[in-house]
Amino acid sequence: MQLDDMRIFVATVDAHNFTAAANRLKLSKQFVSRRVMVLEEALGVRLLIRNTRKLAVTELGQEFYDRARRILAEVEEAEQAMSLRRGAPHGLLRVSAPMSFGMVHLSPLVAMFLKKHADVRFDMELSDRVVDVVGEGFDMAIRIGTLADSTLIAQRLAGVQMVACCSPAYLRRRGTPAVPADLERHACLLYGHGGPASWEFIVDGVHKGVEVRGPLRANNGELIREAAIAGLGIALLPDFIVSGALKSGQLVPVLEPFLPHASALYAIYPQHRQSSATIQTFTAFLREQLSRALAA
Image 1 (cartoon, rainbow, N blue to C red):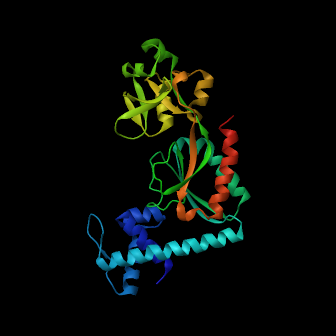
Image 2: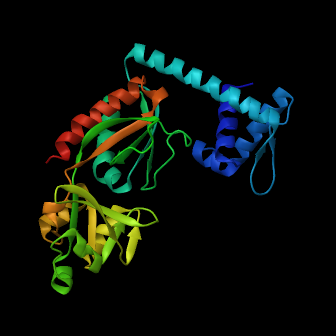
Image 3: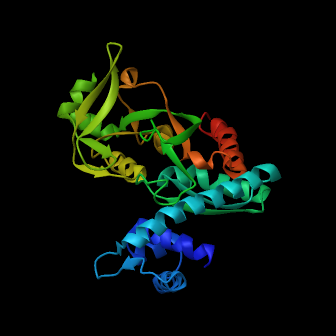
């Protein structure tokens, strides 16, 4: 029995089907299915029940899955301990980051880091969806704002100021909001996922959520920025997405006195990865570089 087959089996159970597991592992579906069959033959038991919709785990399969997760965690901890003793960053680092931030700021920093640390490899996913760091097998994720999952460790990288803004043409057409409550009669461009949207402002010294609505919602900040430039409404976006448009005059800020103090950009990772020399070195590198870049 090979350790890689154990990893493939665990990933398959986590993903609930061979296709998703194969995509996550960057392998073919046929290879993943075959390796699980080889594992079953080596153990002499049925681990999975296969059907057209999804996989079901047998009772013995669940028992093996639980043991395999513990074994793989111990192997990972041993590798991290050796990495920490060795001191030099090395190995594969799977990172998730927001699309706009990744394209503008993270991509050049990854290139810089790889030039300094030739033994490190990156598997990057740039997406504005909120990934399940542990469940999807990421070593680290970059997120803006507060950390909802307290089981993850968060390291602050840099401050991020949110900016409410729109095009001059929109203000001429609809007027300028004087207080956050005025947003009820304005078209707002919603950055994020489904559900009611609330923007936070400071009103009379108190943080207050203001319910907003409008013609467009998207989980990509650049799309929202372009819609704001086109005059479709007011957007609330991180300053690193709109700074260029503000400097050029394509967008103008609104409600500045009511905006909260800067939010923050965080590197988050599972607790069992905190001893990884690669993660700690990369996090320190990002903090040093971004504190300068985002302050500029």
